[in-house]
Length: 304
Image (cartoon, rainbow, N blue to C red; front, top):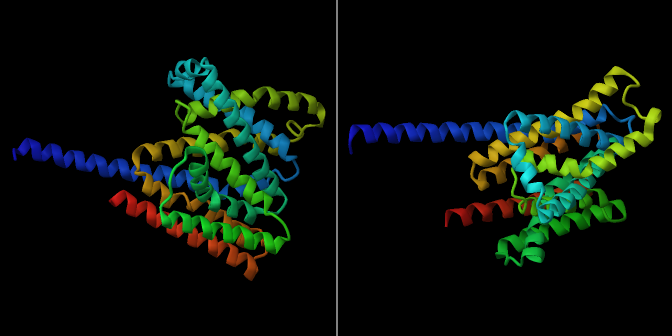
């Protein structure tokens, strides 16, 4: 091998390591923010969840729109929005993600953070079921077993609360469906968020106008700043995740994605003293077992 070729190969290897390192840092940053975000929304406990979501839509759209204009990428989003099929998918994605946000914020401020953690733990397994039902994919035996463990965990939690754990199921169903639909949109993370918030903007603005003086924005500086900060809190982790997704293998992202619900789990127990009894611990343990099977199977499939 020629010396130049050797140097080029070494440089490419260093670049690959650097890209992977940056990807891990970006993805972890996204998941840490998502995992700790209940702490942020707890500061807005006095504000109704619907008002928080309306502000989240407005401020996210303004921030992401400005970012795309600065990068000269707004035209690509506009071209995508001119296709009625893409616009319809974006509107449906917006409905799903806004519902997810609403349930999450309501649950956090109702003292049900552990239920949100459970919901996001089972989301990957809900995605498996959606792939079977919607896409007609065939599952390997380990993945069926993983789904079985998840169902057992949900059943245990339902038995504990005396009914369906609707917060967890709603979060998993809406986010799993959103992820499936989002893959069909030919725009990146920032462009997708812009399209989705643009679709939701008429409802968000209409609600805020209807609230008028009864709204919380402008009542005091801390609340107003927190409501405006819902934009960065939404957009920054999404953009970090997009960087990580471009630079890391799917299997690595699969491992890292459990950082967020794990942090939320710890926040709920140690910061907000949410109750954890044996029945609830068994429900989480069943879902963790399912996730371990799913992740192991995913890694083995990638190696073969």
